[in-house]
Image (cartoon, rainbow over all chains, first blue to last red; front, side, top):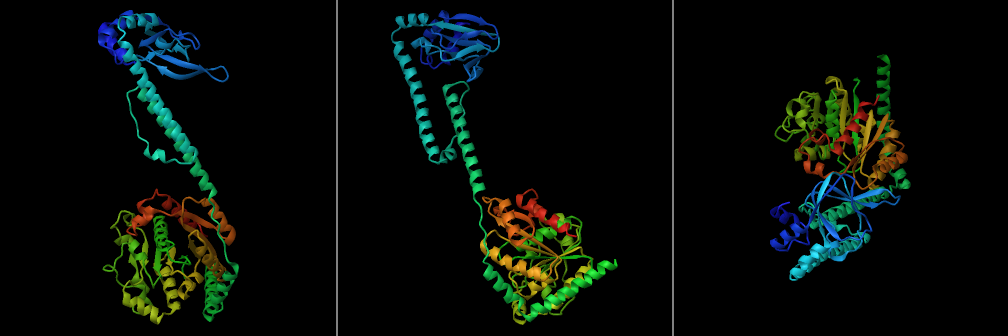
Length: 249
Length: 261
């Protein structure tokens, strides 16, 4: 990968976004190119991580282990995306297993190489801290929102779905992931509300009652007149005539 | 006497959507190829003519003229199939056999008939005459709410009585009395129809409660509809919006009428 093409690739990662171009070129030169066949394991959950990977071509699945030991794909990553940035800073165990779902090519940047650059340019540390801090703030904001909404929903207040915005962000960015979380969240609330409305509908029954004494009294008032007796007789004759006519046919 | 059936549409109280329902049922039955007449016997507060596109300017002889002996009933007939292509829904009736017998909407004539009354037997003769002369399959009678003499007459001579009620206790009480009267007068086919049901209720439950109480079939539970109110009687709703829930339920009621033996 040439020096020019490595710059936009690295800028896609939140960690490197604020770094000057000459540093990004230097990082690119220190990265090693690796080819992976389909189904090759890039990293395993629990391994000590000491490098990040930038995907040049091909796709990877991020998998966790399901309850019954089966493979559970929790995400997919493709060209341009970076995997395992945090390992450059903290060397913590990998949080998930990553497997190539096609033939793939990545650039691997080792922690040692990264530290060498930091040794030469200590001023960059501050920029990196800013990046990590802004990401942390971003995540915290959404966690706080999620807590607030959850409390509202458990209190039966679904008003938030009326104010929900349709967020559209560039794919693969942090904001895109956050907006995916949001729309999944709003969809969940809508479904819960629909089910609740359906239940309410089933529960609301109308109770219709008749005052039988009044019914009898009104019936007698109408039927006790001469007009009514006459009408009843006329109606009887009329029906008899019709029946006779029907029989003739 | 004719083979045609007299179908009276009644509700104990006003505001049930009776005229609107009558007009739409008559239109649906006419669309099914039947020869249909509609008589507006709600002389005190006529209204069904509007649904058929008939206004004061177009109105010629009326039922009032017939009842006062000023004309033959045949002269009152307004041929909807020929003259009512002025609205999107109604235009579908072009060429169908549908006649309206309107009541006068002139205040003086309304007050005259309320003051002087009329011979209900003459009304009955009128019904029998148009059934025969126009060779009708169905004569729909839009009645006045309550149980006055001309309404009792319409019920007495009906082959089919459709009672429209809203799902509320006042309508329920009044309908109970009407059902008892209809049974006392040996009306052969008694059918109930619920209109203006609020959608939050379980329609099947409403139907079951009413059928259990009155021991009579409920031909349809029609929803309360803003769309119908918005139409403001300017057109025949079930023809203009055939896919609407109200229209679908109304066609169910029309099918019940068409299947009465």
